[in-house]
Length: 458
Ligand code: ARG
Image (cartoon, rainbow, N blue to C red; front, side):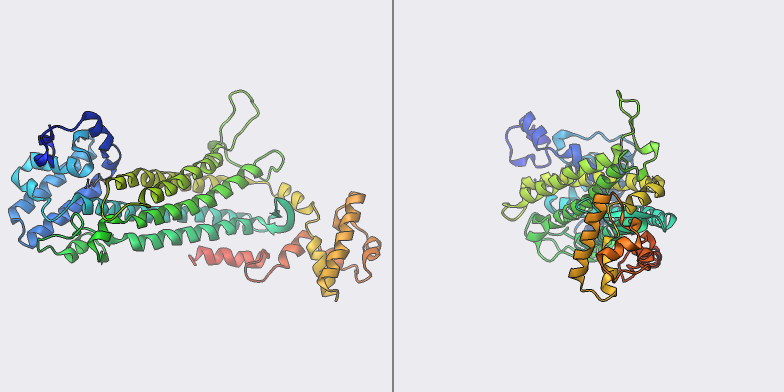
């Protein structure tokens, strides 16, 4: 019967069973129980301080809610679909427990500002957690960068060998990306960390509430400035989903490289057995499932961003039931991002690399051709001419099936008489790498300094 509902007063007939199932959010929003209880306790304490409800009721509410919290945590709370969502499940249980006083809790509040509060409280913790998980991954990358310092690999453009780089430099590229991802989470936290409670259903409340006091109790540095906006917007959640999508894009690119580097064709790395699985038919297989799945899960995170943007795009102010659809994309993204970061941090730390394979690959594909051109520039030749000369030398090497360092001085001088025997020292892999010593370059001293800077948290 609709009479069983907290809002049953104006209804003559019971809710259709299927409608009840269809409109309920308890299946997924029960995750907000802790935030819901915390918010209600603060709200009750404020109501008491303002003399809106009697002190004895506040005490009963706080005690009752604490008991409910314990019950939920012990798995002893029976969530009811008929009670629709976490807010009404808890409130109904409270009233059943403590009677009258429980029924006073919702004074000066609406589920609209209540749910906005719960999500913000929840996201606040999750954003902080995700930033910590990013730190763990950054630590693993720095661990590898430091451990493998000096290992040279080919750098690619268009997935074609381009120039030799330090493997550590490649790891530090991801450190930079994940540092920015962390910054995006921290930025999002600033806009999430605003108290919406007190907006009521949409227009505020007629009771003499003290929102600043609630903010203090719940540790919010700011109170929202417009009641309509407070209950209507989910931009902080969209912002998080966008930041999460960018983060997943980074993880997915990294995954792609790990998958490629694990192939028998590359063999640059070996992921530890714990992070791979075998094939049910091909006995030789060791598949990089973890990076593959992370790459795959990137799709659902992008989808979640699009889902919430689309839910929000045409909603008139203020609250609309459509907004209940904010939670699943949000929760799914939080789980996916945390899971992916956690597993990546461990996998990267345990990853083994093959410095010989990397070096062999770096020595192929005329990777030091740019260094020969730069050498000619230092001998006075304009860069465009130098480019042409080296292009011809590469062409010659292809025909002769040689690499550039294998050319004799006589062969070199056939291309330009500016070339002298010091060419050999100028185009070793080490010389190539170490010559790139300006800020941001791959030179050993530079990379070493960057590792130190990152380890110092800068
Ligand atoms: N379960 C709802 C949600 O998640 C709570 C807010 C309901 N408000 C309302 N006026 N029906 O959005």
